[in-house]
Image (cartoon, rainbow, N blue to C red; front, side, top):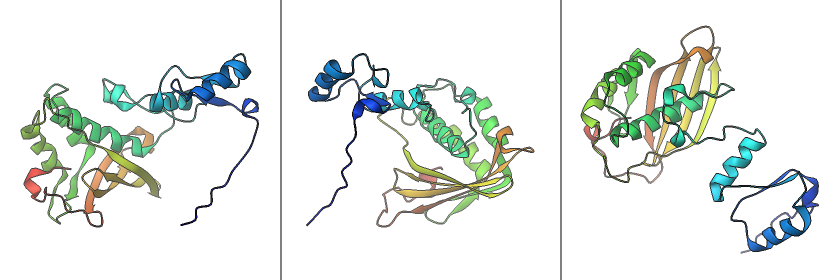
Length: 220
């Protein structure tokens, strides 16, 4: 098998550069000798992925705080509106709810209900349909079912598409090996005023048929 990889050469100290805290020894030596006082080459205080997030914030490329580090998701908003951010926040809420990391409060469920269209539908990967608001009500019995366990919800490749003046379709993958597609509509004259969940549809990814096939043991 032959693999061709493009190679680019440039002077590292002429471009804005970020170096994570646990960079390889050769880079650390280069930084100490050539770039210690160069304002364009910044040595991160964080390691690995945290160093990358630090760089994103430094160069203002996007949010630089992980939602897992935000205690109150209701107060977490981006400077620039992004509907996919709302989807990630919802799934992180589910994770905290099932791990009992937040209080079991009816206020949370009331807010979720208010965000769901009265006629909104959730379609399970098996094809079973139920009301979005019924799914929210079912959350009561799931509170703390994974307390003390290494339970995580991971959504990946969350991609929003605007299909109308105030309507968005958002697709992403869950680590239960399913593709989730969400239809959101604006509550007011602009999407930034809030979004209503009108439809959630999940389908198995190719070759993925987990043991969780009973629609009564899996919500959202």
